Image (spheres, rainbow over the protein chains, first blue to last red):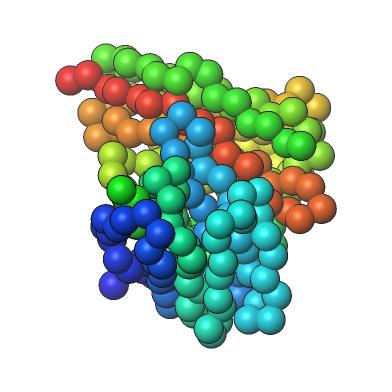
Length: 112
Length: 112
């Protein structure tokens, strides 16, 4: 089984809808991250969490919120989706702050 | 603000050739640098992590070097194979928040 899993893998939704993307990990890592990838722009950090009680905004947090339900689960929400949030979303984990990051398979989100 | 650049954006080589992928970063005060591979529509696979105190790291046919003073890292792939075809991303951890900043990637095609 994969160490970092994301659900759903693909999602098509409409403008204004609330969407939740979920991430689970079995690596036992404390640190979890959410990124989005857009063509030509690389990956950009949305939110990160160093433990269940420590959540921080990344480079592009506007329009997003997160919830760290447990050490192993980190969810990303779009309260009211808009078309420019169409992107590939990745969850990642690391054992320590400067450690190697491990990525999930990604969620392809399309907002119509 | 850290900026990471990867040139060229795309590279095509014949099978068996040795090749070098380049990564440059503007803030030399990095903690470490990580190289990833991304296959189309897939997640990121970690290839190598170079800590700031290291000059290079090797894994199989891959060798990554780091020169903090010049703000450069290279990924050397020996005896390239068609299965090496993918997008290669480098990312640097830097700043007080110790965040990963990604380059836009180099899309490598190895021709049989």
